[in-house]
Image 1 (cartoon, helix red, strand yellow):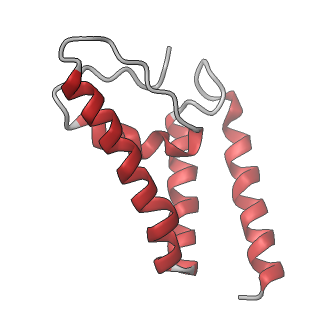
Image 2 (cartoon, rainbow, N blue to C red):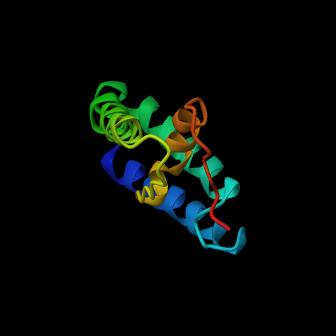
Length: 107
């Protein structure tokens, strides 16, 4: 794909994400937003898997490990974790398997 085509497709994904604002009580904090966002990052993986792994996958692994470290360091405590909306679906998947009560999407 040419650069212009990639930019247009990226703009399309952003527009798709913005269209989910009406779902949930908090804009961009919904399963609908997460579904579109996952699709966006799957597309980016197809465009350049190596860059996507380095820029997205590894970055999220580091961020999630920091949350897990915090959970371990503060057992039984409430922890508020705030991340950019694009990270929500990954955090939910990874933290659901931890022995914590995960409140997502926010209500």
